[in-house]
Amino acid sequence: MSKFNLEIVTPERKFFEGEVEMVVARSVTGDIAILNNHIPLVTPLEISIIKLKIDGDTKKASISSGYMEVTKGKTTIIVDAAEWPDEIDLERAKKARERAEKRLKAEKDSSDVARAEMALRRAINRIEAKDN
Image 1: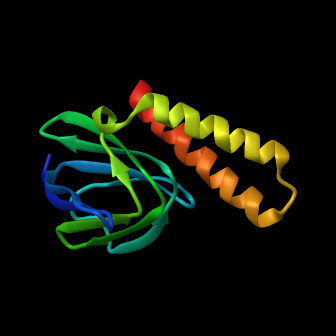
Image 2: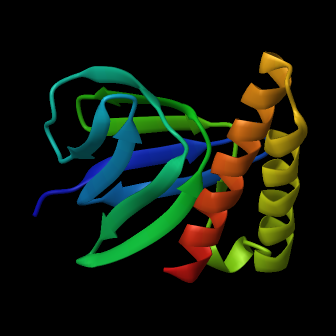
């Protein structure tokens, strides 16, 4: 399988840079798999678990929302946060989920509800990435 260059960046660091055979990410319209020579594309990404196929092995990471740009021979993903499963503090993620669930039960203001829902989605995604 042919390879292409993938770069994943966050505001804090260059999370990943290297050649991959495939990347699977969740766009706002659903999961999308990128292979070498994919048509040019720019799409927003959802909070999800991203999958990278590198030399036949699959690596997973938790990502927050962001954008993906596909050009000839290179894919760039820019997200607010990205973590490998071994970087995730499971207890911290579970506590964040509990706090978000409590805020959702208590909040009536729509802006607070939206923030709590996003926090809950991020926490659940991190827990799922760690558990898999």
